[in-house]
View 1 (cartoon, rainbow, N blue to C red):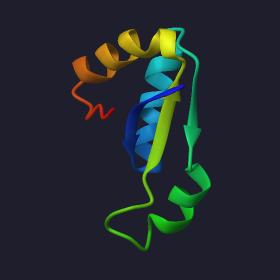
View 2: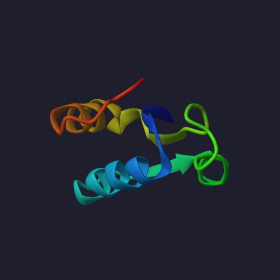
View 3: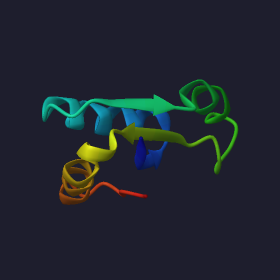
Length: 72
């Protein structure tokens, strides 16, 4: 699996919905940590959004074209 996005929990959930609506399976990593630490930290506590290797090119293009900050 490859990381296609990293950000706050709520942003990652929005991007996850976008990818799922396009038929791309994805999962969040560190979502519990992000939910617990985000109210207290201005940096860190980021949630990662992972996709299968074969879906990465399409997912990266979708995230980038929507103006999201795609980070790999």
